[in-house]
Every structure is written in C-alpha cells, then in structure tokens.
Length: 67
Length: 495
Image (cartoon, rainbow over all chains, first blue to last red; front, top):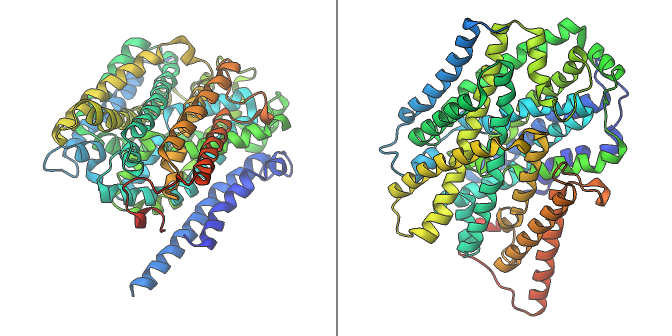
C-alpha cells in the first residue's frame, strides 16, 4: 500500500483517538447538537470519504498497470 | 396495551424472517450444501451488496440497539464510544482483510484458524486462536438473547419459553441453509430496522421540539453530554481496542471472507462507515429517553430505555413492528456467530485432532451439530443472572480476549520473523493479565483502575506484544530466528 493511502487511512485515528481532549466539550453547538456529538458524527462521513479516496486511488493505480 | 393484532404483527414478522432463513437454501444454489465451503462460506461468492447486509447485520445488532441507548441514558456521553469504534473499524478492514481474503482464497481457508495453522505450521496455535474466538463469541450470542428479553417482557410474552423456541428455529435455519440463511435474513432485518429507526428518529424530535431541546432538557435533568476527563483514556482506548477486536471475532471474519473478491471488501470498507449513522441515531434515542421517562436510568434498568421510549411515544402496533425488527436484529447475528464458531470447532479442532480424514461433506455435518451446540450453550449462558446486568461491558470482556489473537492473525501478515512460541506465549500472558485485571475490577467494568483507566483488552495486547517483541529480540541475538510457515512470501509481505 502506498504511503499516501496509509496516511489517508490514519487521519481518522489521529482525530478520533488523539483528539479526545479537544473534542470532549459541549460547545460550540451545531444545530443543537453538543460538540462532542456532532464532531464524532462528522467523522462517520469523513471516514467514508477517506476510505473511498483510497479505494479510487488504488483502482486508478491498478488500471494503469494493466493497460 | 398490546392486543391481538399487535401480537400478530410481532410474531408474523419474526416468523417471516425465519421462513426466509429456511428458504435461503435455494438462493445462489450450489450443487450441494454437503460441503464445508458452500455451507460455511456460501461458496465465497457474495458481492458488495450482500456483504454490506451481512456485515451490517453482524455489527449493528439487537444488542447494540438495546445496549447503546441504555448506556447513553444511564451514563451519557460515554455511550458515544460506539461511534469512533465502528468508524475506525473500516480503515482497519481496508488494510487487513483484502490481504487475508487473497491468502484464504488461494489456499482454501474458511476460518482464521486455517490461516494461522499454515502461517506458523502449527495446529496448536490454530486451535488456540479458534478457541479464543469461540469463547469470545458465546457471550456475544448470549447478549443478543439478553437484549431481546427486555422487549419480550415489555410485551408481556413468556420469556424463557419463547426465547428457547425462537433460537431453536434460528439453529434450524442455520443448519439447513448455512451462511445463506443469515445473509438473506439480513436483508429483511435491515429493511425493518432502518424503517423503524428512521420513523423514530424523525417523530421523536418533532414531538419533543427538536434535538436542541432534547439535549438541553436532558442536560438539565443531569445527563452528562460529554465524558468526565478521567474517562478520556478509557473512552478512546475502548474505541480503539474494540475496533481492532471486531474483525478478529469469528463472525465478522466469516462475513468478510465470504466475499467473492477483495474488491468487494474494499468497496464495503468505503460504504459501511455510513451504516454507523444508525448507531448515532440510537445513541440520540437514549438522550430522548431521559427527556421522556426521566432519570435516573441506572446500569440495572438501562436496557429498558429503548423499549420505554417506544412504548411511551408510539401506538402499540408500531411498537410491535419496531420490537419485531429488533428481535430479527438478534436472529441474524446469532446465526452468523453460531455458524462461524461451528466452522472454527470443525476446521481447527475436529479436523485437526479428532478426525483428520473427514471429508468436506462430513465437516459440514459436524458444523451443523456444532451450530446447535453453540446456540444451546448461548441460551443457557443468557439465563445466568449475571448476564442481564450492564450488558455493554460484557461484550467488551469478549473483545479483550479476542484482541489477544491480533499478533497471530493481523501482525503475521507483515513479518515472517515472529516465532510460533513467541506468539503463543504472548497470547497466554496477554490473556492471563486481562483476566487478572477483570477479576480486580470484579467483572463490572472494562476500564482498569491503573494505567489511566485504560481498556483492559488494550493493556493486555500491549503486554502481549511486549512479550512477543522480547522473545523475538532474544531469538535474533541468539541467531535462532528464521522464516516461519508455509504461506507464499509473495502473498504475505508484498502488498
């Protein structure tokens, strides 16, 4: 696996694991959701996007080597 | 109060999903199901959509739907650990599982134990990994059963009798249809659960004046909407440890390995994080339960938060529908868990130690008997009074055990230099330390009192890895290190 893809997959860990002291707070709120809730919800979508990027990267790489 | 029509909805939906489980025998038809690969892995031919339902059915279970709102209602923000947990699972799946799939396909492996056996040329290590998986799986199935007990009691249905009948039917369709059974039922389960949860998550905030109001009121009632700073290390270590543990559980491993190719796994690791929205929704339902029912929910009655909320806010016919969806949400994972455990017992114990000459047909029949044994075992376990307490923590104990097999299954994909004895001793020490810590915590919580309140499973894993590292260094210095196992180097280290 390429380094750039490893980094992309590591990003959610950096925020959700090592960012705990930063996101363990209730303000600022978003749409009535405390920070603690909406920040972690946001990472559901961001992680899906990051893994999708890695998947597309790898597919492009594979097509290149085939052709 | 529930009347006849409500019970018809409830039993009708559950009955329907069980019938689907039996009919699955005709689905993606194989020449014969008297074959361990066809029976236990459905011939390894599931595409992206089916694997989505199968793994989704595995992870987002009845126990989750009951335990997570329960923990939220009793302990507040701590319950949110489930979100980083199931979010972080997928990058890990993306890294480890396609590689394991390739090796498994090439060599015809069905279980993680099959891989470990060849990887270290050690059937004992394979048996240890297999047994750890089965031991961790048993309480997990029991928790599915405990999770729906509260629904049955909410509906005033005789618990022991109906659970026994229901789970004998689950065993029935599993041993008839193999992995096809839970895979097809998982589609029914998902449609019903998503329908129920979406209705609830839209209607409840509308009634209560929006999420903002729900959070404000819950906070005014004394619910903590973040976590105490002393729990921070525990929170992230539990999320991380659980994420690493999940695909070491036999059921999740089986779900991923039944894919038709490694691309299927990669696509699912990109799509499945979105499924975690469901977990966030049910966490919010825990907050709403506090607003509607009030505090205090304690660890003893927290499992009722979800059914309480539904019966308070919805007409009985909808409650029956939602409860039936959750019950079906226990049937699917129980079936896969029983099957995956049965596969391990068959492949890594029966085939290795009892009858090495067993044909594939014979293996599939042994696996069928083991499905029944595992389900009956889990039923008995679920009737143990201790199993009905704070059920969320019980699952994390199982996770702590299965985490000790990480070096054998995941780490071994990257280096050949680790010796089987190093892995075995690391496993043993990690497990013993984990159990000692759990005893010290009286099996009530999986955060340890030292090490900053870290998750016991992760502490065990660190010590496990430390032991392996130490032995490997000693072997390196004494020049007794060599490559282990029979798996092709190209499959292991390269890409």
